Length: 172
Image 1 (cartoon, helix red, strand yellow):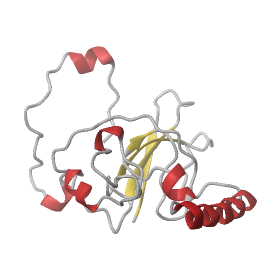
Image 2 (cartoon, helix red, strand yellow):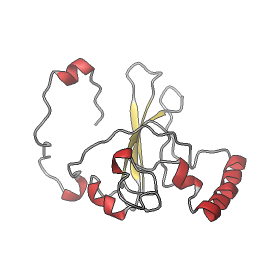
Image 3 (cartoon, helix red, strand yellow):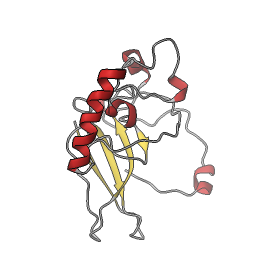
Image 4 (cartoon, rainbow, N blue to C red):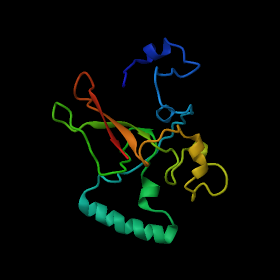
């Protein structure tokens, strides 16, 4: 469920000491308590490039990986949970269209893992070797929800329509 609130509405209610529990639930579908560390990142699309550019980037990525040990997809895309940016599609893109006919804008992603790939928030860049590790130990710091294999939930909105309609897509 996506709820829109103003800053005044959010400030009027105190933070909860504990997350509310649904009446019936399976532990696998309830996130583990975790902390959000917002970090600004410049990223580029992974699946959403024109075909000829994708071919060029693929060749360049192979050269980069051979010379530096890091690929385009590790260096320039983020596959973690995020607000804005490009969806970190695990499968081919499924951009939704709004009822008004426009392609919807990516609002946020909730990813299956916060430790996929080499990109990490500044707060988690600790210890020797973080730059070249896939950081499996960081998995314990994630929300702990299993979404297929390594997929996520992508939320989209249409800012053109006055009621800000939202849709989601899921891939695994």
